[in-house]
Length: 264
Image (spheres, rainbow, N blue to C red):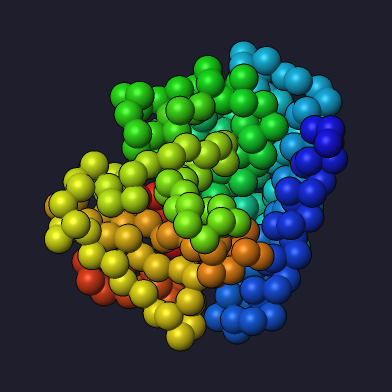
């Protein structure tokens, strides 16, 4: 399978899953409708980046010129009124290269800046791991992406296809969508590995294949997707639909390791 074929398959799976989950969960319809609009723009940016191959020195300008306009268009077309107004204001008045450069540099951002920078830059990093490696942050530990140094967005229990073989837990990067392994009984934020300090919260009736993995030491959490229970899951999409689990975690005083694209 070529890179273009693989990219098309990846984005089509994300698109199909977003439609499926939007039809299944009323509360997820609005964010997933926006996500579907973003996917079209992100797929175009991904394919352009694979074709153009901008260098690390060019990537900020490239994201603003090639990817950001499509993200802006999607936000205006499918976002909430608040997002539309904020995106248009930022487009006209903001330092767009500064926003993207800050996100690429790992600076903490909030609200519209974080949304626009992440939505536009992440597909470019996903397309160009060699560029993502130049942004490497973190301490080279198991809690950061080995490609770009980003924090994990979601965890996966992969479906190995063999009843007696249990796969290691996989983490998915919030910045470049890279994947790496981490022990099943280990906090993905601080490394705590005492099972008694790592509570699991779930709503099996509503989300049989998803759960919260929390930590009593650092008070952080992330969503884990069990692909053995739902082989059709697309983790970064399913995580967007887990808003009720995020609310449960917040009520218990936990903070997500990193908010997802929709700010949850």
